[in-house]
Amino acid sequence: MEPSNSIAPNRNRLTAETRTALAIALGCFLCSAGINLQFYFATRHLAPGHEIRPMLEVSALGLLGIVSILGGGGVALYAAFLSLRRKQWLQFAYALLALGATWIPIFAGFAAFNHLVAIRKLVLER
Figure 1 (cartoon, helix red, strand yellow):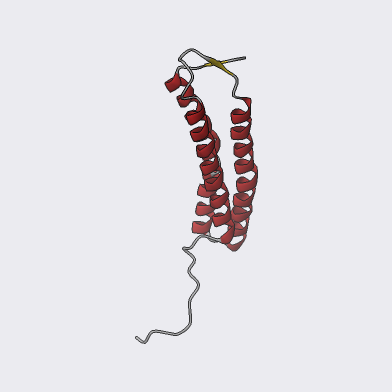
Figure 2 (cartoon, one colour):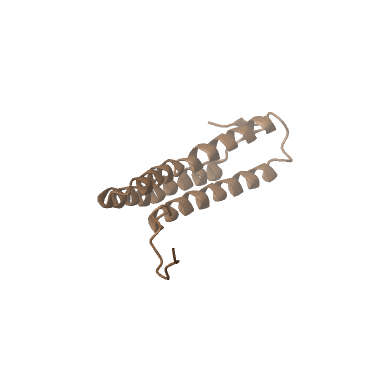
């Protein structure tokens, strides 16, 4: 059997929309990790039991979560819709995985923030 010079389409690859959704989720995750790292370094001089009101950090984490869910989730839903129309079931599964991955930054960001508050033994003001 001779190898052909034509390039056959590979249906097992991620679509551009799925890659975009994953890139948005990864970018938001890395930004939330950076915010938590800055918070870690900013609170290293505070004594345990110190009261803090980290409104900027919490609002930035929430904004990143919203961007990831709405932006990346919207693109992932679009990728799922396109793959359903084309009846490409593996692409549909990839799009659903990307949709689930867009929720990671909000959960991981706030969990890491709560962990940092617990490690430093800080008290959050109400």
